[in-house]
Length: 227
Image (tube, rainbow, N blue to C red):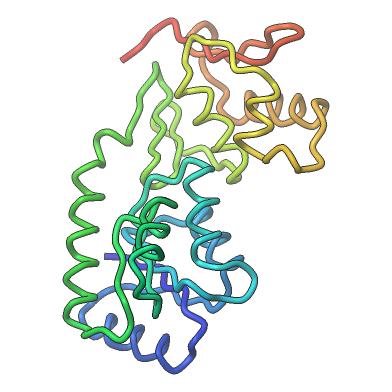
């Protein structure tokens, strides 16, 4: 099991990390919310543990942004806030579970194992094959004809959005919103460049799966041979 722990209390974070490693759990520990978001979008974790209050971004903000970007992995909120409204807020934001400080380590480990089992059960649903293209959301990886394709986080999100809407035109405004956010300083020319680079990287056989430019509207992923 691989865990991302985001906890800015260095004493508690170090203790949790050591205890988890004793239980043969692999742990990446960060103390800032923005760092946690970067790790989560660039690596695979069975469960992400987010402290509610952190510098950079709060756990709630990180959770909300990950879900907005389509992150499907398990998220556990760790917090001293015990009010029912806070619990509801955490779950409504997209957390799968909620653990209030102070807690017993055995309970944390049990919840992590339960969340990891649920994530593993969804593995097949997270793997999509279209022709020679295989997209795995659980590991954020892409393979074409058995060869792994190295994509950046943005490129993966762009491809995933087109795959989710296979056969349908996705407007440019929707792509910019879902992948970058409406407030981002990204032009349609930047989007065109990303699509061109994505086409070159996946380099699919002619006529198998293509990303079409629908003039004046957006882009569409068209599959002619679907597995």
